[in-house]
Amino acid sequence: MLPDEILARLVRLGLAGAAQAVTAERLTGGVSSDIWKVSAGGRVFCVKRAMAKLAVKDDWFAPVERNRYERQWYELASKRVPGSAPQILAHDDAAMFFAMEWLDPSDHRLWKADLMAGRVDIALAAAVGERLAAIHRATAGDAAVAALFPTGPLFEALRLEPYLRATGRRHPALAARLEALADRTAATKVALVHGDVSPKNIMAGPGGPVFLDAECAWYGDPAFDLAFCLNHMLLKCLAAPEASADFLIAFDALRDAYLAGATWEARPDLESRAAALLPALFLARVDGKSPVEYVTGDEQRDRVRRVAVPMVEAPPATLAAVRDAWGREIGLG
Image (cartoon, helix red, strand yellow):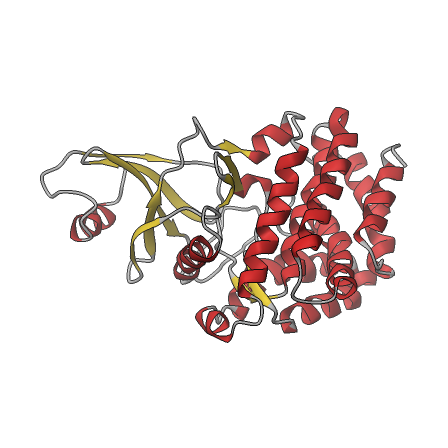
């Protein structure tokens, strides 16, 4: 049921009529926001409102103001790389919610669903890399965009602390390196970063990949987005082992397409930052505050640790080095 406050504000925004029948279905799957599919006046759209406490096992709080920056990320990404994000219909920053277009599942597939079922579309992986690079390229070195996203504290609360610093507390021998990696990432200001480029937040639509859930939007290091997404190509080998070889091919396709479009800085510099982040994020998805739900056994967690820990201790220079180490661990080296 849609809260009365939001319904009243939708009426004021012109998305619903005062005497109009409105139906709302709460959508599941997220941990950080309330999301509803709303039908009003013959149109269907989505309403999203940020929660202060995230729905995870550990205590994890984040300012609800992130809703404004997510909305701004959608607006800017849609303008500079058309088709890359949903269209915003209306917003209310006082109530910290926005309404956006509904992407019908009949022609927008959730990438995570395909990958979890072992269906690996290599062309889609390449398209994700290409479009992600296009967003970074379109915003790199843009002071006006940077001024719209003064979200360093949000990125710290949603990404650097729960992923890198929290993992360091669970691995004291790695704490100094993970702290330094978090600090370096926080200090790198290059382009507009999505912050949660995960298959669960990417729809495969008729016009290419569409990025959702930009609550972690931040003007910072694009290497984080690349590493965050490539991490899932490695992790999915544990979810659908029969497709492991294809996941590693998808890893290469996404990486190559992204780096081909990353013209704003020297490739070795960008890749080395991503290569340092990747094993740290890999480890974080079993030992950080937001573990992936499909890695459930100690044996699986130990496999991740065997690969990740040495590479956090001695960061590789290339992404292929991480992919190859994981391939050897799972018998594909």
